[in-house]
Length: 157
Picture 1: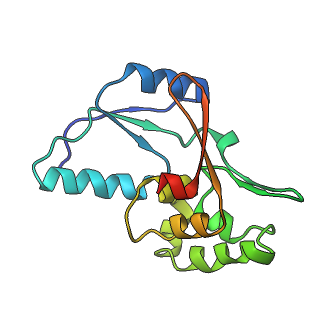
Picture 2: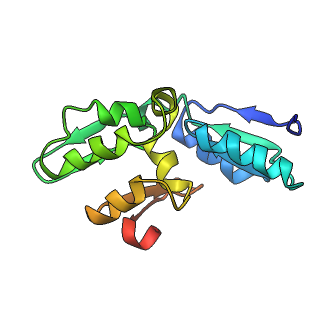
């Protein structure tokens, strides 16, 4: 089964991504792509329209990485599940991430799948939302105007 023609956009900065998202209509965002491809296939099979545009975030390297301070751990959205699993920062209560990451699909999927994608796909079977809620995490977003928005994971889910 072939998907409908789709134009792929690959911004190199967050500002460029925000501009695209504010200008385009009928788009989906791609992080790692593991949920997106399945979603597009299911939409096509169900006879629903697939998006005209895909905005890939894979070149936004500054949205990757994990930082640990005395008071918090920050996991950037484009960090892969495999990168989180391998992180030296998974100590104390954060060790739960290693257990969760290990149980996500297969190694090739973990190498592609992003933490942000796992959180925002909102499938009921994804593991990260329960962990983020349990740890009292705060999720940070940016709107198309570049304005930062923060909310507790519990409120988001």
